[in-house]
Image: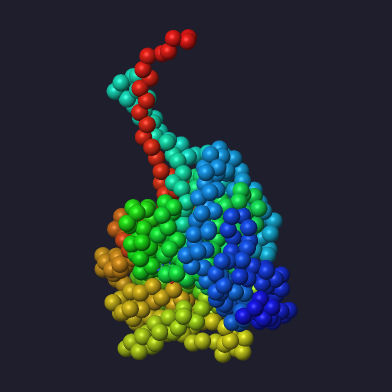
Length: 514
Ligand code: ADP
């Protein structure tokens, strides 16, 4: 399909983003390699749709090994000079890149909403803002890449460690929060003196390519490269490339395991941010004015539940069960499903047919479960606009046994289950009874219980009396099968994007020329 044949999406009252559509069309068939937005070497492309109305918004190159090699070679060439630029100077360039994104934020957030189907006001705009913030933060932290001096038994010997760039970093990102996850990999990697090749997700390549195009204007050529393609054909050769010395991935558990396998033969370090099946727990003494909206925020319905940290298993003490369920259902009824580009919309569309079908499959299991009650949602909308796109309402179910797939698998759609409990010990055992260990949230006024939960819950991102999304400057990562390593903070840059030499220098005897 030629660029000119890309379907028009309806503009005006329904779609409010003609400029964003111009961006996706301009970037159609392109990638960013060696400082240039250019055609891919491959002639193959795949269609990218807007999940709100399934219109094709552009074509993305289906890169294979030739494009991977070109991007990695550009990154390897740029590394030679980039790593020698003083760290604070690199940081300043990143901060200018963040300024440039901010100057174009309106369009960036629209392209993000068009690509992902995430609502502009509740998701795409805040994600754009936090991506700018995270880039600035890492720019400012570049000067914190410090080694240590090590006390020596011999006063003539100076011992210290360095913090050095690792080399070319490969990043593979998903579609659910593509801009934030892009900068979470790119900004610390670049600040630390590495160069980067990112493979975008098939479903949402344009917002990342556009962001990269803007950032690239402030960076030397080849420092930041962005390619698109499928996992096996493009992601695998990227990870396996001999010049790639670090891999950072966000996505599903099976793919994370495969990527760790590709990287293993060359002993390449890997950071993995994988899935979760996260508990939100309401104790009998909880402040329900915090807990009820907190549970809803935790469900990440503004991203259609497509979040690794979504609190999709809600445990509520039986004494407050009815009150909490009633309160949550009343608020779910206020969530406005609609055109992602409309300012009035709270919740947009699921990313793809595959993901919608996944949600529908789990809903079939739920509906066939004896004793299950659909407390809210559970049916595709019939409104003519909404029924065309991949829309599904926020859905709350109870009466599902904890061992059901619905309570065990990461659905990655707008579906949560609620379960009553009476014993703290049993509830903690159930909350921990999952292979994942990403996030957990508890509401209580009892400090001792809160601290006991913090100690006993098997999760890497633990909150009490709130359930906010991960953010800049707060170290984030999972336990168990939810991942390896941390992101979003100084320690992630230092530990995951640098290598270190230990140096021992014996001063010897001073020379004669003093
Ligand atoms: P999701 O289920 O959220 O789509 P995936 O883990 O399938 O998450 O995909 C996340 C990213 O991993 C995407 O960019 C995808 O193309 C990439 N990917 C999928 N399979 C592989 C693979 N075998 N090797 C490398 N990358 C892959």
